[in-house]
Image 1 (cartoon, rainbow, N blue to C red):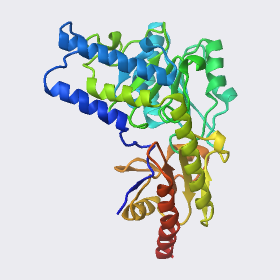
Image 2 (image 1 turned 45 degrees about the vertical axis):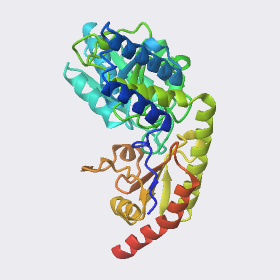
Image 3 (image 1 turned 90 degrees about the horizontal axis):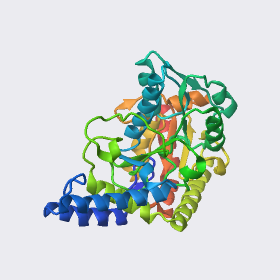
Length: 388
């Protein structure tokens, strides 16, 4: 049975360009020709040159300077590092740390904000969203206080795809002199990202969502901004992230970033919008299935669509689709081990227990949508009939 991956927002297959680089450099590593990039011997210098080339490639993808790129294990670490650094900066200035964030941020943002502020007697202020899942910039900025350490806002939502007003928020935060962090985990590799033009102080993303190896990512720290590192130890990443860099995996991240030149990114974005548009249209023909998030495609990320499905448990739909070769996800759980209502959907006022998320990526095709067209309605109707 052919398999159809409609869960690229969780993780995307490795791009051929990245796989080729992994094969090449793993072979060199197996033959002892790579060393610690912090060392001065030939093996170390070979690794250093390759690592800095990958940094340039990643910087090019997001419109940053190479020295602004701090390699991480992914968005979770990057988010924690940005949050910790901003909190420590506030504490060093003699303030009780305060963070402002939207109610639809990823759990990594919510939990880091709550735990790091409370550790120093501070707090996090959570701002609600409208039915589409979008925050009001006026309300968000009204919550900023003189001691606010950081404003957190995602580029686009990880469950329903709704885009946030990041340009306005970043501009107004800069006017107020408040640090702003953009979680671009679901934007980088899907839409053009230019952190330099945006002016954000901090921006995070993972590689595995656009075809780079899992366990890779980056935190962009604006030039001139000094933050205490989360991981303490040696002076890797210019003293901003301790620990030996996973060289070969990061070279794969660089290769995936380099493969996404502007023309290819534009082509893939257009393809994703077309495939998601087709999924939205086929879902519209099924009774009691409602699109969640912004109904305007231009108000959502190009590769994500989430639906409320009445009269059936989403986990049962996922299992039924999986038996028919289709991989999807439910927005009501961040992980299969943790089935709980979605805070994102609750904040939107939507049914937080009955959602399905479909997401496409670089390797998706019309065959994936066609398979869903043939199976989705039947799976839902069969489950509804069993529940009657």
